[in-house]
Length: 298
Image (tube, rainbow, N blue to C red; front, side, top):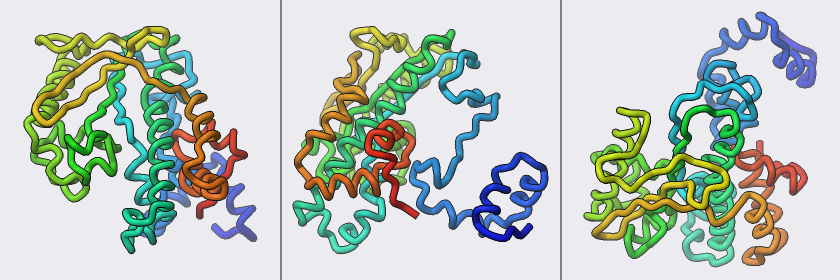
């Protein structure tokens, strides 16, 4: 199928006819995969969540009817750290090592890591639960992992990323080598091993019973919007692990206010970071609206 120009081709691809389906099915994967190489949780590049009406309601999470079964939502605190550090905005600084030695570049990374992590963690748990809870007829359990934030506990290597996207994987699979190059031996301490056992106990109870509580574990209350404590936090030091109920100390609105007030980077750097690194992500709709849908990537 050939169209006269890009505009006509784009319009045709958005039509619901079987001819579009047949055309897309005919394409080799080798043609499609390179187009999505910079997706990095950017939905406009790789829209891989489909409102199919079965797994995800047609209305998205703003629905009134759900398959209401016990639900566990999990997040780290620095969910954006891997995506931001390996964004092409910082590629030259990674290549020459200046992200570690140039204070201006380090401050820019710290800026997107901090606020991107806060917005992403809110999206993963609090914002999603808030949208669902009024019409969800089964308990929603929220968990946030803090392990990774303290360099004295995890070492300088992991502390760069904090409680990153996937921080729970080595807690489930203690033999996993997937993150060793990033975090070193952070998970080898006695505290990390106890955290792994604690995390697995909660997950096992949830899978077995639809309820993560029991077996002497710290009580994990279901998420409620007005509760004083509605999230279970997990953390560990070098020798011990702990679970405790708490609540996020920030909201989407307060994060955006903090971004406005932050003077750790110049106004020009801030505009570039918001436009080139933080825009168009899963978590960034409110940020994109506030800053005029800035979006500068291919």
